[in-house]
Amino acid sequence: MKVLMLGWELPPHNSGGLGTACYEMCKSLSKKDIDIEFILPYRADHQIDFMKVSAAVPLGVKKIEQIGGVYDSYRYILDNGREAWLNITDQHVLYEHAVLAMSESRVFDIVHAHDWLTFRAAVRLKERYGYPIIMHVHSVESDRAGAKRGNPLVHEIEETTLKLADRIIAVSEHTKKAIIHDYGIPEGAIEVVHNSLNAEGILPLEGNNSFRYLEYMKSCGYHVVTNAGRITIQKGLPNLLRAIKKVVDKVPKTLLLIVGNGEQEHELIDMAAGMGIGANVIFADFQRGKQLRDAYAVGDLFVLPSITEPFGLTPLESVAYGTPALVSKQSGVSEIINNVLKVDSWDIDEMANQISSVLMHDALGEELERNSYQEVLNMSWDQTSDKIIDIYNRHNIKVES
Image 1 (cartoon, helix red, strand yellow):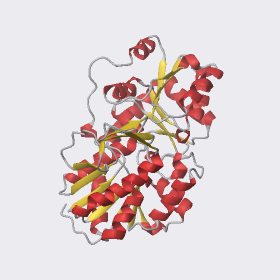
Image 2 (image 1 turned 45 degrees about the vertical axis):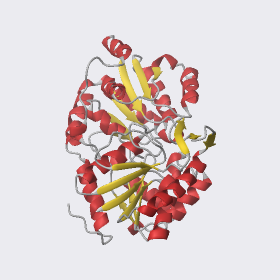
Image 3 (image 1 turned 120 degrees about the vertical axis):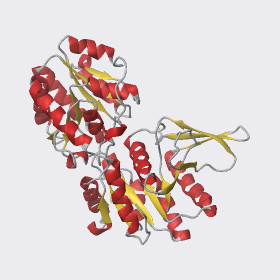
Image 4 (image 1 turned 60 degrees about the horizontal axis):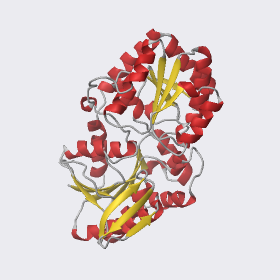
């Protein structure tokens, strides 16, 4: 069974949860005799042995460098030493043509594409070779634009390609509803397959916590609220700052740790200073590996305040490292975990009340931590991959599992 996966990122060269989700899903599928080739828009050493990872790079290109994150500009260094700069739209088109050229010498049973950046390439493959195509939607443009219409070009690409898909997978009911609302796709064409977490894959904490300052402040009676993710309009961080201001008024010894980067970072720094809580908010930039694990572990509560969140893996990861979570009701992850606090992203007063309650009542935090950890222990990407294989089978492609 040969599956061509089209994706935009894989760890450790990822900017967010999309790469992590693709990695874990493919790893689980590969254990069930699914032969995967995963095509990326760049060359890198991913040290992956469970599938073939290829780069859609044109002839004559010696090296591709990402300038910023994987969704920003690209610099092409050509064999003749010259340089060429591509923005994300140009890179998207180049990827489409490169994938088509690479596929001339390959045969697959199905094409499985992840998010809008790869959807046009999937449609081209369907048009030329007749492959069934599955569009896996990890977010729609209205998500990325903070519940607004967003980029009209991206909106058009999503609408056109989703209508040509043989099957659409949405990572949550939240995302399914957005696809129906934004693009008029029939409900029966979309299947929800939630992301997950492999509890056995959670690496143990090791050595001293990287956030020594925060550990010291906790020994002085301070509490730490943690957030991790891209610092963009979608994530609802201005409302979190407004809630933290109210929390600090009630529980002065409160610190907010924000792990991540993005276009809203300087705006939030100015906002925190203007609200008089600049000393209470720590911006720790993008982290991965031990530093990210330590950020989860040092918190007393993890908060995901997203205005709209297709899924949201970070609360599950936080729970796995012993920190309970508060998630917005506008997130997909809220659909699959019960023992977390939940709040509407716009309800600043209730967000502040729930944060304060955990910080002021140790018993509440301990109960949330204990019960949510048991939920996470029962999660597995194998359940997710079983559902995906079932979708493959229903397209007349028999897969032995």
